[in-house]
Image (cartoon, rainbow, N blue to C red; front, side, top):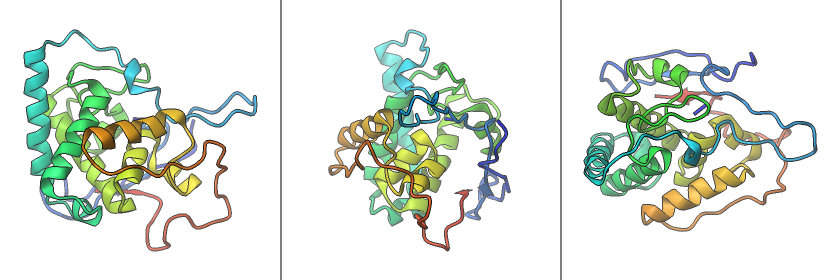
Length: 229
């Protein structure tokens, strides 16, 4: 997940304390680092390096099975979130989707660390983890609950499984910027792999040569450029 241009100002509300109120924040490169292309004319890259590059310690089958089961449990725990219904998912569909996301992020290794510093099962960046109230990103339950809150917020924001996954990978501002799944091969593959693993329907991908929609209100006016919890 991913110098100084602000993408996120944080207003942390009562979700962390267990209520259903919204938490709204935007954050800068401390939360997600923007990778700018070198000026060669190539398309900009997503804000995180591919999760497949995470530096993972060896993890046995029994350990992976344990953290897969824990991911499913946490998914079910958060399945009553309004964003899940807005995206048209049942509780069990969301649990499968969230588990597939964790698999793609860390291969169920709670010690996973990406080259950019994303940590744990849900690959939370340190700044993101702090804003989510995650004190120890390497604690499996803490990390998964933070990742689930973050992901359900994207479902609530975009109302779409595909766009929420793209936002989790590349950042919600990129989804807004391109008016859909950004034209990053990593992000497009990320969305395809996870939706297929979860047994969900096919994905509509924008062409790789799409340009940012600078003159268009990509997101309805009632939705702010923030992440909501």
